[in-house]
Image (cartoon, rainbow, N blue to C red; front, side, top):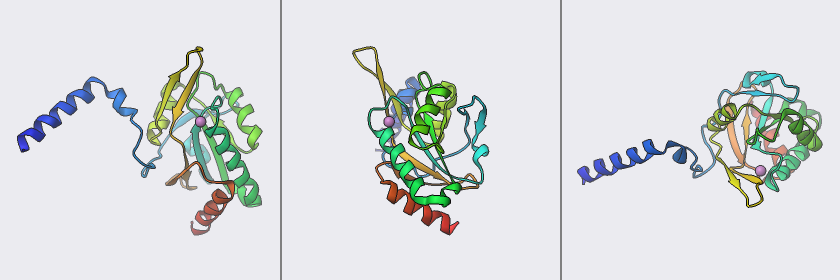
Length: 193
Ligand code: NI
C-alpha cells in the first residue's frame, strides 16, 4: 500500500512538473481563505501603485474585466449601491477593480468603465505578469476562452476580497451579495476593528 502511494505520488509530481500551468489554473474548491498580499499595478492616470498605496482604507478588491457580459457589471453595481448606503462612512472604503484582461483594459478604458458605476471605484491594470502575480496572491482563477468570431471571454472566479486598513486580508465574499448586504457586513467589520 505504502509503495503504491509513493508510486502514485511520484507519477503526480511528474505530471505537474510537465505541465505546471494547467495545475496552477485549477479553480479553487471553495472561497479563498488565506488570500492577499503585495501587488504592483498601474492606476488610471498611468501611475504605479502597490497594496501600500491604499493603507488606511478598507479595501474591497474585485478581479474582472470590462468586456465581461454579466458578473462583473452586476458586482460593480452592487458595490456602488453599498457605497451609497454607507453614506459618509464610505470614506473609509476603497473599491479596487483589477483587470484580468490587460490587453484590452488600458488605464483609460478601465477608468471610464469603473467610474460609470461609482466615481470612487479605482480600476487597476498592469503587465500580464503583474496581473498574474496579483491574481495568484488572491487565489483568483482565470482563463481566456476564445470564441469562433475571433473575440474572447475570460472565465474567472468571482469574490470580493476585503482587506483591512493595515493591509491584512479579512475575508472573501461571494460576489452575488446585494449592495445592502455588502454595506451591512462592511459596517460590521469596520465597527470591530
Ligand atoms: Ni466578469
